[in-house]
Length: 229
Ligand code: BTN
Image 1 (spheres, rainbow, N blue to C red):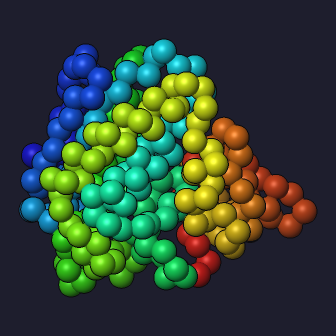
Image 2: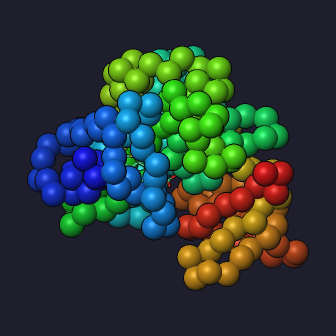
């Protein structure tokens, strides 16, 4: 299909948990209007529907981070891979050479439908990866078992969403998984400007705190580049 997010957006009244998984996407969508390479059979390209109207709108900002944690949990359980999170929700390999192995695109449709779009490079080989900054579960030494990952994710996502709905966003878990904290970063902001500074931490509402000179700037959305990449 073209994009699991696009197809699920046509069915916003489906029950929570409705999931579409593709073998290949011909027009996979990434964050910030980018495309997402989704070749045949070598990744998990899937979208899950959530109806979060029971929660205050301000707390929906946590959904991308909650999803990233659930994906990280499932990669550990099903693929034997320990990965980090680059703020807000990139799945990255550890160490100084931070490489992206997966990403999440959260889209709101109408008043009460949120689509959690999850893309994980599973068995792509080095020469098949779209950029040198990308990696895959296989390349990082994990087990690229797509079916086991999808099964595990059903449990981890349900449990992370329950935690979020209880009014206790998983802040401590997110902070310990987030490899952006403590790094020099450059952030491309939605208005096109660039912020360069030290990523001091993640605020209680999930936004990134960046110290630039004497000021701390709170970032709600942006594209973060770690200075070490
Ligand atoms: C990112 O840019 O990091 C987010 C990538 C999200 C890709 C996934 S693949 C399944 C779902 N369908 C899409 O079209 N995009 C998301």
